[in-house]
Image (tube, rainbow, N blue to C red; front, side, top):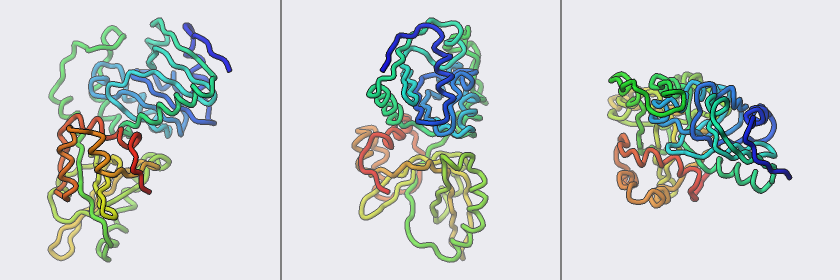
Length: 328
């Protein structure tokens, strides 16, 4: 076991450790600047949690295109607002300190970090990152956010003098979050025929089949099916064995609409993260506390709607890492 204080050139060590293809790598770092994908070249299967909030992107502190490079490589990248941690956990070693992932940190700033091979500390760092949860990031979402990115003022982060254009605001507003009551039950021959035609198209839109899979649910009537768009984020609430469960967040890949007689139906295909299970709705409500009031009608099977409460949107992903009540 070895531990040491690093004040110079620890980025060479981090970059070297990040290239390892064997073992688990878990990183939580607040900001991921331009050129960060070269400084932290994580391999497929790694977990990276960053702050890719609108504020972090507009101030130039997180560069969506660099995040997208890792997503395309098969790294499980997630975003949590207000993240301030800088924890780098590799197989057999952890580095915890002051540094974000940026050229400024590597070349200009005075940083300090503790590097340790203590097994208990390394395990605790991995657990910390894995339990953070966060919103899974897709290539499309990274591309949308890149349109809002601005160079950091003075190269050190913080707001820039450029104003927010109406076009930028429209791009940001494309991130819509839906709460949808799902429908369980058997499907007739018309549903199966529609699924045979549409599912192959949905599968082609999955960018990483290692991290994501195609899930779907049936919707009857219009309303939601006419309004939901590709890449919208969806939480599906289903009733199973007398209890309500909330599925993890998934992005819309395709909405296939069809008619059976006069009845309008749709199959909604989702890009769902693998290995993440549903949570009991009552446990989610208890975890969120008073801010969860808009979610309570879901237990009565009300219609789909967009979640407008920012606190709920930002805190819901955390439930899939911290809450009990897991089901298969």
